[in-house]
Amino acid sequence: MCGIVGILGHSIVNQSIYDALIVLQHRGQDAAGIVTVDEEDRFRLRKANGLVSDVIQQRHMLRLQGHAGLGHVRYPTAGSSSVSEAQPFYVNYPYGLTLVHNGNLTNADELNSKLLKSARRHVNTNSDSELLLNILAYHLEQINKHELDEDDIFYAIQRTHKDIRGGYACLAMLIGHGMIAFRDPFGIRPLVLGKREDQGKTEYMFASETVALDAVGFEFVRDVNPGEAIYITFDGKLYSKQCSDHAKLSPCIFEFVYFARPDSYIDGVSVYAARVHMGEYLGEKIAREWSDILDDIDVIIPVPETSNDIALRIANVLNKPYRQGFVKNRYVGRTFIMPGQTQRRNSVRRKLNTISSEFKGKNVLLVDDSIVRGTTSEQIVEMARAAGAKKIYFASAAPEIRYPNVYGIDMPTSHELIAYNRTTEEIAKLIGVDKLIFQDLSALEEAVRQENPAIEDFDASVFTGEYITGDITQEYLDKIAAMRNDGSKKKQESEATNLEIYSES
Image 1 (cartoon, rainbow, N blue to C red):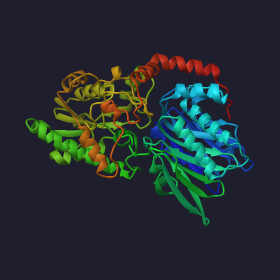
Image 2 (tube, rainbow, N blue to C red):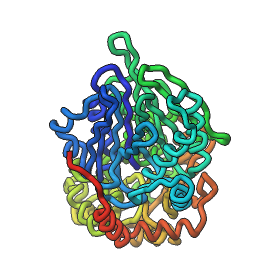
Image 3 (cartoon, one colour):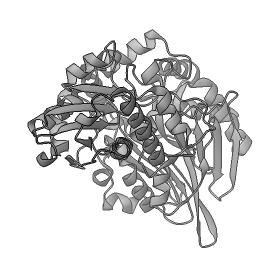
């Protein structure tokens, strides 16, 4: 789950891109990068592993000159966490093309074969983003014109859509032409368009979430539609076209549960409002199904921070006290995103500490946004018991996660998911709680749809195993299972290190 930004302006854009990436840091802490186009039509690039503030320093900002640029924050899904796979990626032919990508391509092997055999292009990493860049470059090359117009750009995007499958939101810049934004035909991964006026001229911005627009003073215009491409020339002309034959909005519902910031709007949905609705539906389910133990619950405590708004609404529905029982260290990354199980386990106690007075001698209802592997939940429960809780009840704002995500979230394989082939009672025993309840999928979908009734379908594959693109086979799931285990990732990182062609700037 990466974060992407693109700004096309009339003044130097490096600071605005940097500021936007800072507020999108929650979408990836593995690597960061910025590329700009200077007045001599040269790309200025800086990327490396680490947080934005570590990767992009003052000396780099001085070099990142230009009125247009792209930015990226990454955590690894396909490929490894090697610096060679940090984005943006770049190819020099045709014209000079650079790209950032949020998502995951599900036909990477097929694409790699096509590039090697038909296009005679070499891909130097395991990243599907580099594949995507080269597929787009190939279709632009086939047009075989010195200068491209908007119809040529849209034709290349149409051909790219036909080649690639999966979930993707992409931004690209083409030397001598402009900036291109496009989104997969299902709109699985988010992408928004904004604008601002500067000295009587219009500047444009694309980003994964509206919070990035807010951070740098851009006004939200609209979401990029599923399957749509938007092309903005470097002199400010904007063109758009639907480039897919089967576009239908089916966004990833996990964006609203966990990933997006509450102050963002995605596909017409206030993330904050959707989470409040999640709390209302879950509170009503608790009242229905736990009526015999409601009087036993003394206090409701969220596992910060995504579940704070959800837990507060549950407390209101149940007429129970709401308390903050955990203090979060904001400088530790998200745990299920971390690459190794040992690292994930060690991270939890660095990430959270208890306020013992809120637990001691009380029967506590803990609320979290979801339960993935269960290791984090187990340790949180252990911390609550150590702080003196008598009984611990647990509510998940998401249904049971039983299947891996294939569209850009580095969720574990089925066998590593605690809910896979287990009942609620078995899960409760494993994480050590007295009672456990999950949100119903229909209620979760309605919580989001309540903000935008036009969304008919969601990608909810992590709950159902039904993948919205309709092309996911067991063979593919077995393959990503092999790629995502910790031993395989270490091997990929070692191999990628040996292949790196990278200069420190």
